[in-house]
Image (cartoon, rainbow, N blue to C red; front, side, top):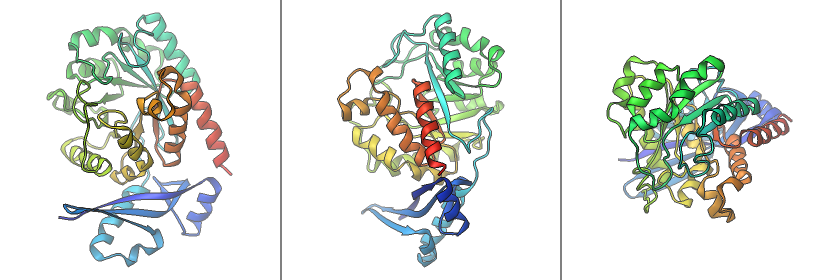
Length: 353
């Protein structure tokens, strides 16, 4: 059976985008008039392989009836405005998710913020620097890491979570966990978003327990587990396989309106896989949900630049963030909030013209 996929491409920004949309030479991305596209890439997949066809949007009506139906359905989702379901987050604008790892063994900053004083200072600094979301985690999911007991994980994060909303009512609180026990406790503390790197597969009770909570979710892709994910990851086609994963998982989530998708850069992917996902990220707009990407300090930056120390990968992080921003990605999960926010502000100001 042949399956078709539609990727928006050839983007324009600022005044140029507004002009092209007005003259009907381009379409708005996610209902925004400051970013537009005038071409689409159509992937045709069947057992024999994959074919790719690049066409201008004005040539869509020349497609076969079957292909045209799929493309037009995808385009409805690509151009539709994203609903703002997350606390104080407007998906028309880019948002930064600041990372707070309360772990002794995270790949980049393990042990750095383990005291309440240091953690609170880091939260304050990230919000001051422009973070709209704070993502708190108590378990490392770096390559090769082991899972820990839920009670140990909760003990690491509970003091920060219990007091967060008392200080920062206007800031979106995200909790990075794979455990239903920690998820439930986090929601009781006022968490707005659950960010589960396993895509809610690690704990069979996670989605069942959330049926009674109207909580937003990050649907994240990972091949394998943190312990095994980097042991020779393989895909038939990484881009389309992960698209199919999201399509399947979204259909299985009963309360599927409040979802953010994350392709999981570095989670069961080689350098080639990561670069394919980043360069073709706009395919995921046809799912109809906001997109979050975390490239911060990831190993692929080291593989390209030779920078072994993860703390010295801000340049590579910023480069990937700005490219993803040009493709319409809405949320960026980063360590260095101040530097990334500055880069985004300059980039967006340039693109106003």
